[in-house]
Image (cartoon, rainbow over all chains, first blue to last red; front, side, top):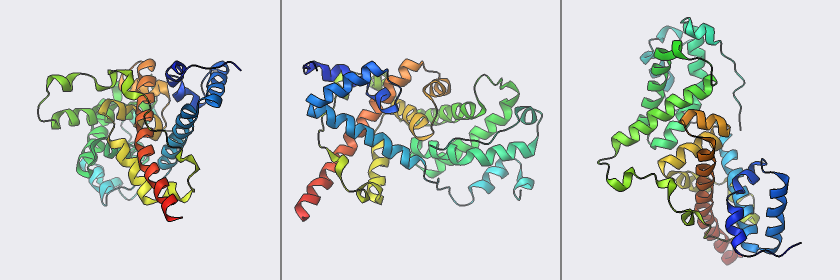
Length: 86
Length: 203
């Protein structure tokens, strides 16, 4: 394993989104994983970024709270009142 | 992320089939409302966005050419409506407002918070306070970053679809998404590092 310099942190930053999404090339994933073994700050950034995106995706699975009567008002505005019951 | 598995007949919609249109309205209302409320931050504006989106969709359905999916097309209309309303609401556009905030120095997006909050107990992440912190973090993103982030990470569009919906290149979408995520990570790090300290103190 080669030693990394601090400037590598900045270089790796640009690939982190794709790394989190699992769309980054294997070679670059390896570079990130090797770097985070020796750079504690970057390890934390990668882990907490992964957790951040995970929490966002979890929130996106929750049902959406719609205001009362929204459907009725929408159907009325779209002149589809007769279709409300369907 | 929930995928929209419901299929709609574009031919029926374009032929003016009201039942099919109503079915589309029911399927997309929650998604479009969620996008709008997270962009605008208030219920009335969000409802207006959803209504205008469907009115415009109805007017322009004949021009829909299926180059993008129906879902991406609706998100495109809604995103435009939301961004236009935000711009109208801004009192005066000063010169600095006109500069795209997300094209600033990359140094602004460099991580500054290094607390390792991943190890907090699971209940910390599902509390109503945690959800609020996430929502508030999203609200601190600039409009340009927020719309990309919401389409990709909340609505589950691909990078390509997000680009289509916003008229942006994939490179720009990727850059803005990364910046949005990094900024949100900073926000959550501040929130959770306080929780970590509190946890330690109460032990």
